[in-house]
Image (cartoon, rainbow over all chains, first blue to last red; front, side, top):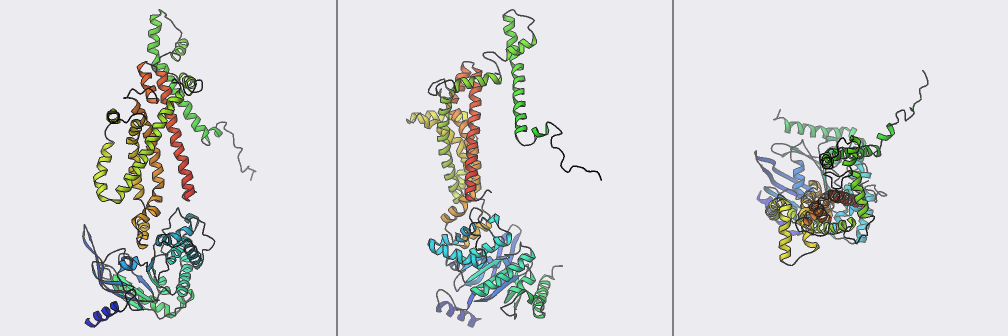
Length: 279
Length: 307
């Protein structure tokens, strides 16, 4: 424990902006308790998790297991009540102020009065980038999500899948090293979801970003991830962390292979076990 | 199988065309209102007409004669529609606009204080809403006063406002406009507070992840979100503003304006004049609200929020 703490200290001292070159997220003994009228709710309890640069990490678990809350803690949308967390070697708040991450919500959350290009430009305007730089980043990121040609459309003119792609382009336009995604494809049908999963993997390979992805779909988690974190509810805690040995370069066909099914099986077992005390 | 034409000939019923679309129903409603108005005019004016006959010693007046006479009295209890229309025609088209007897002149006076009050009221309403949304203290301290301000009957407070403003040397258009302001800022404040608070949690969270300042969140999220709310409350505010302007003209013995017209009419029992002023006020309110509706449509279309 001491060794661990001192190792962490040296990390903090070594670099001011990013800690160890590989450690993007470092969570130790983190807990979050919501005080409600019905007494305290332990949304997160004693979470330990390390995420390395270039990882694709999925949080999977049933509703109420705290997977979204954990993502929101990383994004500084919630404050933990105990424990330690660092993002890029600094506190989540500093990381947010440094615009270290892009966040993709469950819904596209595009502003209806802005065209798609203007929606992608939103964070860039807030960052105060020059018009030329904005144009450049809009074009680049719209192309990355295959939305070139839809710049002048309004959100309601696009399908749900296209809207979610636009919101991914918006998150990418910040050019963060870290992409936080909260069930981004949860509201889409399975065919669109498969397609977007494949595109997301290509995007990840192309940009080499670290992705933290919340889902409640086992195939989605296994297909996308290099590391799968299984959470279980009441109190929200990590039940299992599975390092996937699937090749990084994968296509949808991989879902039929025994390796894939083996990992999916372990995830399913984890979800079952984490739930079993209930019913 | 017999050959049945797939499309039935459309007008088997001669009235089917009348009730489809909006022209038919609207016409029916207007005609119904006019009919009710005429019936009411006859009923309400009959007692006085009987008095006239009695004094003139006329008995056995035919019913048809009496009905006609009730619709052409000089100072009827309820003037008939055609009397009001004739009066409006005479006082708008046939009078010079500069004439003190021109209804257009009086409408213009009321319109100017309505618009002035409305502009001040809308501005005040928006500013109050911005303060209330961004500061808990302002919310807690201002909101009760804003609400209670509207529970005071405007007729009671209007003379006070005029008297107080006159005492400090402000007279003319502004005191009347202040009463319009008093009535019109309220719906705008309430509507804008609601509008500025209406962005979804996700949209607010998004601003947070961008580390946007409150000012940026206001301009880029809250304000555009509140625009539809603003137009809705501006419509209410405009109508309230007109009421305020007319009420402002009543207790002050104003010599010009629709309110003055109403007051003069009631002094001299000129019911036809009263009703023509009332109709004019209704027409004015309708036009102003419709104008805001047009502005709303154009704005929302420009913003891409309406299809």
